[in-house]
Length: 467
Image 1 (cartoon, helix red, strand yellow):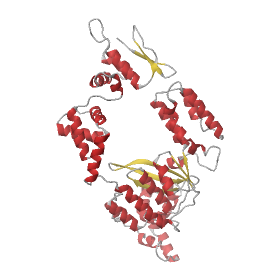
Image 2 (cartoon, helix red, strand yellow):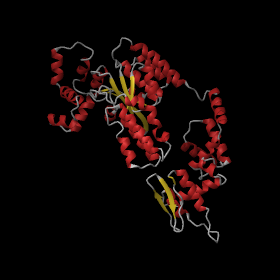
Image 3 (cartoon, one colour):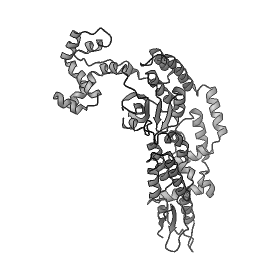
Image 4 (cartoon, rainbow, N blue to C red):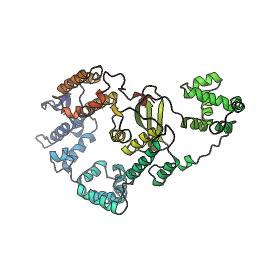
């Protein structure tokens, strides 16, 4: 028997068959799952199921019968109890539960995927699924986890040194800031970090020697630490190094490699090799460079993949000039690494009056620690994007509400912003719990609304996004 799903403007759904239809219900996954299970349990006069799994799959937006059968199977594992099914409190496989506990005792921080691989190998079973692992994890109480943690700490297998060592690093580095306008973190602190293994340094990269010889490179290096005279400068500019230095100057000021190549009669790949040749000199030059600073900084971080390992690229950009003030690669974007990044910015002599971020919570604590006098603003673009993401998650596709959200900050008046937010809440209240959608905005509004109508305060972190 064919089934059809209808959705109305209030984001409610109902199931229609040839001879009946259900009442309208909120369009959420839990309701769809329950309707699917109920319809599967309907029987005809001969005791046969009225609907096949393939018929029922349309309720959860699929054409595959497995999409329906897994929900019925889960219902039976939960002792045919709807409440337990919705709360995912199914009966756990005792063998799997016991194995999960044993594995967690060895390493509490394994991912679900890693737990599956270890248990499958240990039990020599091929039926270990993510659902079974999560069911087992839900059965493990906080008391058992605390017992594991205490045991691992007492045996020295788990510790909290990282935060302690980083705090020590902050104290030492802050001692170097006073009276210092710019510069690198001292070698002493770097050695302390390496010894503590807080940051994993790549020894091959650190000890890497410059193998490619460039004519005039030694003379070029001497410009930074020896007396400079007219003859020495003339020799450098007349050597092949002179063209490469000139290419670097053009490139640093925003001219593309293709344009530079056309000026020199070279391909852009050649210009790229030139820049690589003098990268050592460029590094020495940029190390001590401090650009004009407006006091307004946009900070952001992005995932980047180096080899087969994922890292975070942190950047700090001047909101007015668009110049990059600092870029660093770390293995995490936790609070400690946010503090570390801000501290490196501080050591270079940049003390911002305003810092704007995308709303990542770790920056709140980091900024209070490193730049307690800075005003922390949040990017309105990221706040709006978060609202749309919550709408999609709640399966609300209302054009009027979407338009209202898009226009929240398109005004120079703070009262207008608050009035528009209030109107959106009124529109949402019949559809879903308002706090579920607007809770994040309510919390962050004080840090977003400060830039409304104030041309001196940045409203977005787009400078960092563009970088």
